[in-house]
Length: 156
Image 1 (tube, rainbow, N blue to C red):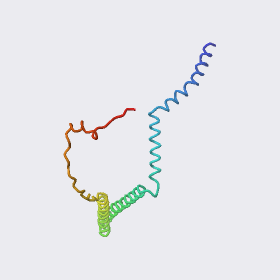
Image 2 (image 1 turned 180 degrees about the vertical axis):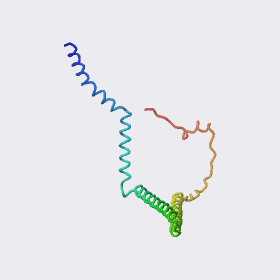
Image 3 (image 1 turned 90 degrees about the horizontal axis):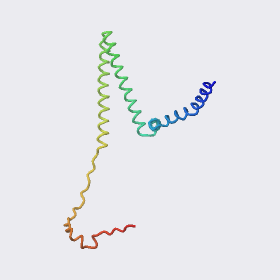
Image 4 (image 1 turned 180 degrees about the horizontal axis):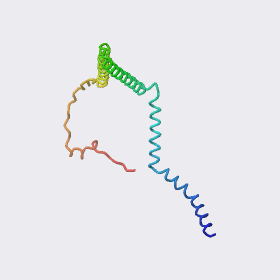
């Protein structure tokens, strides 16, 4: 009988102490920083998904360009495989045309990127300010005697 009472008391203590122990571990600084990082990441994804922002427009333009380039690459590989498999010269010419269009598309993208970089780095010349005449600095001995050059500190 005393063993049953001891187990019952130990169970009650465990029921009261264990939840607070695990709750304390959940509120540790490491866990709260993880929660904060997750919340920041969610806010960043929501902010970047606004259709009116520049980042949204740039990101979707980049995705569209990647899809176009991927589609052209798949078309190039498919026409090359089909031209090789059938031995057809028109399919080979089509493959060459697709490869030339890929090269021109990449050149166009690089040109646009370079123009944007140049537009961002435009340097405006600074107008020259009129030259001021330099005056000599008086000796430090003049500071000690000149009342206007001293500073009085009033402690309050």
